[in-house]
Image (tube, rainbow, N blue to C red):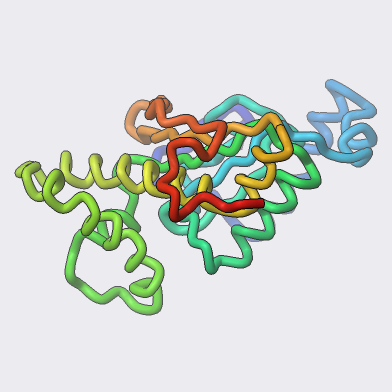
Length: 223
């Protein structure tokens, strides 16, 4: 298949195990043609200014949709871009990004039509992930009055996607990791975005935070 050919959408028949390895070789060869020292420079270390907390959905690749290169965005992905205070995986990534890499921006990025969010709106059991989706159901509970008033199910789902990002931005701000960075005067902002798969465009929800001043007192740490 020609490297510039875009396969038919949803057609994954061209993806094979062996093809992935061949694709890697093509990627290396094409990159070295442009910059013979590219991988040597990349191996020297990373100083990404951004931590991206996004959904694991295969249609939302952080680098591709922001037109950034390897080394420019530190990425953590899970089902429905959740920030859960008992999730040691997420906390470890956050701690490393903030305290070692010194990122300047942490961005929670949801996407419209998120399967995890839509599943949380329903009553069907889908397996062990039910325990994870429970956190999204809590977001629904917090905003039930607004959501129930939205009669169109798709619009209700889209709004829950936005509210889920809003709550998880708040969850980031409530961590001792982020609050300690602010206390030390570190240049760190937390943001919330939503990506539309059907247009490819990102919407900034305008909920950026760079201090704990907007948190309820019960969530503010004395550090």
